[in-house]
Amino acid sequence: VTQLPRVSATDPIPRLRFAELAEGVVGYWSLWRIGLVDQSSGATADQSFRQVKIIPIFHHDDGRNLSTTARHIWDSLMEEGAKVELLGNVDATNSRAIYDRLRADAERLGENAYRDLYERHQSQLKREREKGEYAFQMRRDALSRVGLSQVRQHRLRLLEEDVRVWTEALRKREQIMPELLPVLILRVEAEHG
Image (tube, rainbow, N blue to C red):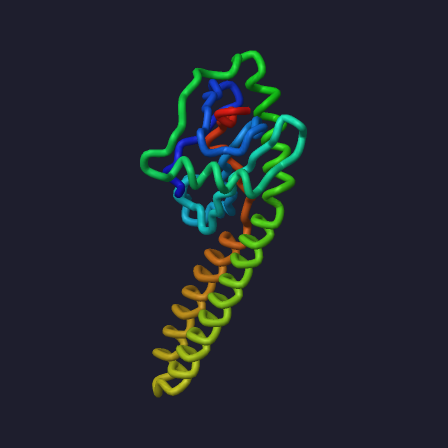
């Protein structure tokens, strides 16, 4: 999913005519990648995605956002032999305004998806923290049984360094940024619309 291309605000927007859409369906369809990015271990933004969701959005020319239509168009695009006709591109002078409107829709409509990703990330971190703390405590307990005091103290110092490194890595993973990227924007028209 992280390998999907990105669309910019100035890219031409293809116009497509769908044979299987209901009459009167006309507007802009877009596909957005919503993700959480953590910059742990020096990874680039694309490499550091931990959680990603893809959402389709259909913005009808009358101002409505139609989620069922958005999913139907996505399904149609994925079908082999889909009855779709390329009609050219939308006038480039409107691309920025269209992009801005669709991005505002994606921010609003993607809020629940982002919240779900965030909660899943926090749960995962909590489980990792609990497992790590338990594992380090088991190691401490085992080291407390080492007979020679100098050996025990040396190994405990090494363990505390491991704990420090692990804690720092976990802290970095807690620092996340939301990411909203357009994957595809299309002008969509029904065949008899």
